[in-house]
Image (cartoon, rainbow, N blue to C red):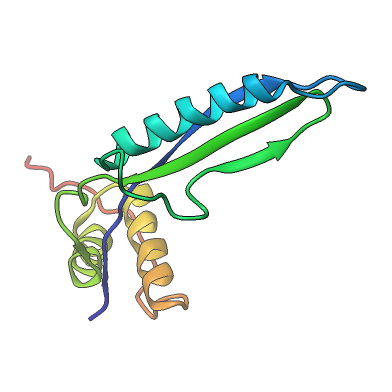
Length: 136
């Protein structure tokens, strides 16, 4: 039976913004300082020593209307959720809800979950309310 798991990937974008308003643009010294700061941060983030060459696409330079943005993005993967959820287990719970629940709303929820899992409306008897036994 198929199963699924989930994960969370967090992207963190580090940016250095250099003013570059028209018509003069950005000063070379300002771009150089921001570039050096971005490169140092990239190396620190990835554990690279100063002599290791950076990949050509390590830093991105993006012009905007009045700025030049130097950036890099890192992604981190969170730990997987507690356990993979088996569709068999979900099917068992839906069947339990459908067959055992006294509340008609729970029975109907079980019926709907079963339908989602199977991709069709289940061929089960209609949900009918049950009444608790009474003693005289």
